[in-house]
Length: 248
Image (cartoon, rainbow, N blue to C red; front, side, top):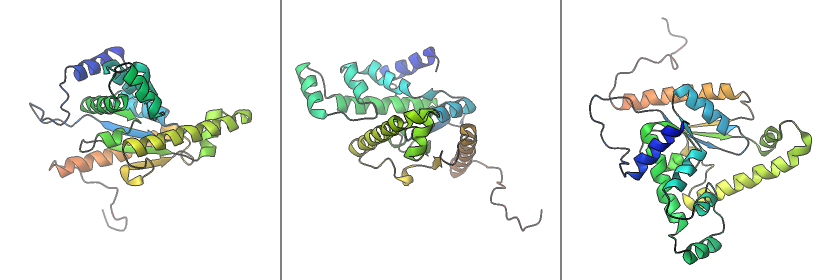
């Protein structure tokens, strides 16, 4: 993402103009594409998100989300970074914050993360992780989850080197466990609940990431067309469900 676009996002957040659901003035326009990508570690989710954003003509937001939270926080930036998709021990964190006269870092992180994610959605983008699909409740968005088995993900991270697979497997299990705990304590839901997503793709089966992007793009466009149809806009007839036994 271009640096000037990141600065524009920060300015938008800092000036407290964040009203992602306010009515737009002027002629009605289609909302910008907003896709959230939840992913298990080693599934290729980050690469898929970047390719998808390019295809949709929007920016991909991953570590930039954390950067925006840190840039707008009053708490210690190191504390904010510790909270990125994981929950470290709260006791030591609270003690440190109290001694430094800082606000509760978790509360501030939650508040700023919500503002940053909604600010991104108002401008359009592909948002990686951070529970964005839950933070955008009520906002138009397409929610994707990328999954895979621990063994296949570990092999992917090892890059074909058998000597690295064991360490990679430990990493996959550690990161996924941290994310699961983050969701359970932060959002009070399981990040593996399929009802939280519009599309789930298993990259054990879809190994070509470009093909995964094509699948997501097709599903997004079907979903987007249905959303517009619900608002009374005319939609072209779909041939997807056409009865193959009927005549032309």
